[in-house]
Length: 150
Image (tube, rainbow, N blue to C red):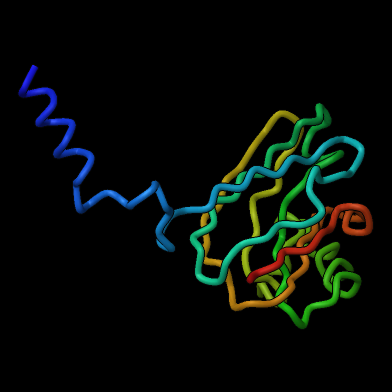
């Protein structure tokens, strides 16, 4: 019994564990965002801290296949406007609706269909407000939101 009490005391004062379970700035921030067959994301705003490591999972909770109702999650640079980017993306069918030069994007997921999911990991950009969209043709008007970095 004394051994167990001693062991518990050592664990409680371990200098390698964060005090009060505080998260360090190096921890990963996990975000799950859903898309559906009605061309909607379940989030219109995501807030993170500058430099956070983001692990973002896109889940397509619909049933329609990628060819009919594909979705992706694309984080645009600050100076990129949704409309012109989406027009350019329409021409990039062979690259899952991401312009081949990647211009205007910070990061993006694969294009997925109903029942699928995909995950990306990236570092949050500089403080500011960014826009995220689905770049499948015609979806950006309904499938967009704010990615706010504090």
